[in-house]
Image (cartoon, rainbow, N blue to C red; front, side, top):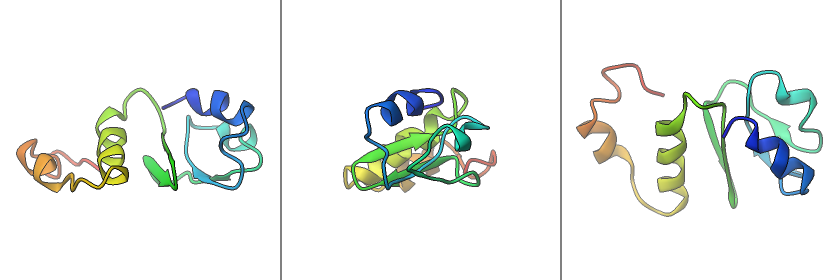
Length: 85
């Protein structure tokens, strides 16, 4: 989440992967395909999100990565009703 992507980048974990991160990090995350228009991104074994205001999208992406459908949880939280992405 957020600036944690810079730590993963420094460790070489993000090379060749689709990622997102804090606004403006596209230039810092060289070697990765930075996706600005998605709040949370999952690519192979890495889940990233844009910032501290994105815990739900991050958690839902983790659920997808682990093979669990997040839709029932989104429905219970009325996630779509409040504009969740």
